[in-house]
Image (cartoon, rainbow over all chains, first blue to last red; front, side, top):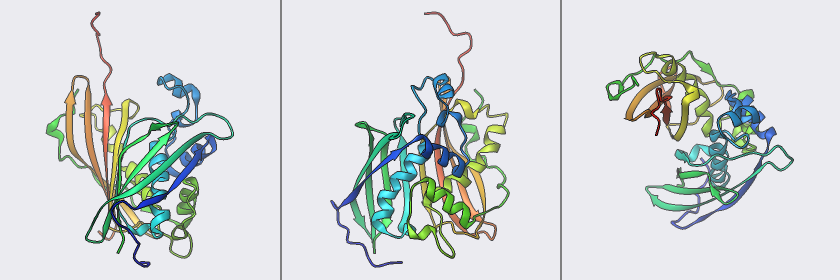
Length: 138
Length: 145
């Protein structure tokens, strides 16, 4: 693995802002094999009582981890990662889609493993809960 | 509402082996907008959450198990966790084995926690992907208020 990462409790990771568009959702559906129509069809989303198509939870979760892997460099450093899917991310059918903003900081450091706590928000709404990754930093 | 705590520990046969390829890794990384160099080159590793794609292959038998009466379209995925032993890499032949870890039922709903172990066909453990699913059964003969 690469050189040790300079991490201490309180270290803020560089932030990340990502536009999830309908194109992103179609791409993720194809790449992941998750073809649930609520992720591409307003008709099916509406039938479930949703105001619009929503992003795949796993797309939001996977995108959020970029905050950590962009910082850590080698994704192999990630030991564990967990989230709660607290709120859906509605994705409008326009050029910008949904802007999801990610922030994170080191909340614990022990035995060469940093615990990173991640915040993910869309339109000021927290879309992931208890999002935490454990990363080797030694 | 047949699934109950009695089903904790139930496990299903491993999925057919899936061979991870560089092309699939590139497609998945692009879908995440992730240009990390580790996902390209000779023997690329897969983005960590690619494990969910293989884990989902193991969900079929859970929903096909008539005794449990679970339907995917009545299920919300509420929590997801991964613990990796090592990254998945191009060339890995991977099977996924699902186990029911925890069941909590209340009224017409059940919280079901499952774990899927990803391992190579040679027996090397790669990752455990744990999910909590909230299942809701339709309420029949709903009483008028």
